[in-house]
Image 1 (tube, helix red, strand yellow):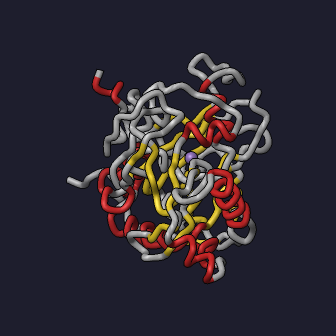
Image 2 (cartoon, protein in one colour):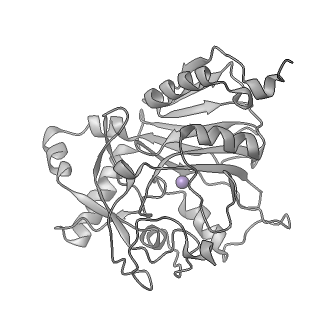
Image 3 (cartoon, protein in one colour):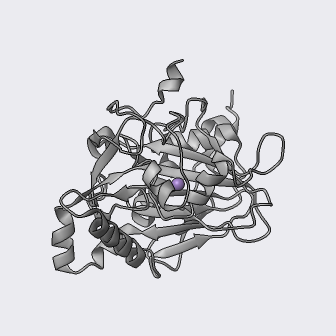
Length: 318
Ligand code: MN
């Protein structure tokens, strides 16, 4: 008996159109819900090359997106309540109203407007992440991507040599404080007592071998440096890095899916009128412990320090 097409997967010849930046490509002539292994191999190859892939008009279900995310690796669950491969990245609450400026969700969404790479404030940083668009505001709300491979390549030799020896702590308490928001230790996800990971400022990509600047809004407190000096250095590196031709801003259309490589790309949310709903569906892919796991140290902003190499919230076990 013939299997239905949906279960068998369909061989496809993808079309990859580079974006006018040092990163990013639009991938067409592909249906992600019908993906077969050979087409996946083609996608993975261009993913490593372009670091950001845009798949227009995919209109995936939660299950279909979760299945595509699993092609990249294990799912990183963003909180004790996440059960599947997807989690909403949204300013809209279950009753249909939008989050107000005094609510935790609002503060996190606004914080995301700073350039960052995902989960560097957790023991195991993320490998990759994807977003798809379900509801988009009338204007604004793009997602920006910046190429940290190219940012590294453009540094002069003396700076490369200096940065090679440096590390920085990463903390969501820190980045949110810099964005003007205070948070308590709630153990839901980023506001944990696992400690602040210490990560090298230059990261070598495990699959491509390319070096990248690996800092972002969560990075602070380079050991051996005065805190202000460290902040100034990290801010100037980020400012310089996130400039054309290294930047692509994706204007969302409902049905789009975008996946990026958190090991060499920074991203940020662009502002929009938050009285309008903006509903994206996220999937975060866990890093590999050989290359994305970092030791953690006491985070002064957290209420306690219980070091662990696990990202899982203690509330997940209750
Ligand atoms: Mn993010």
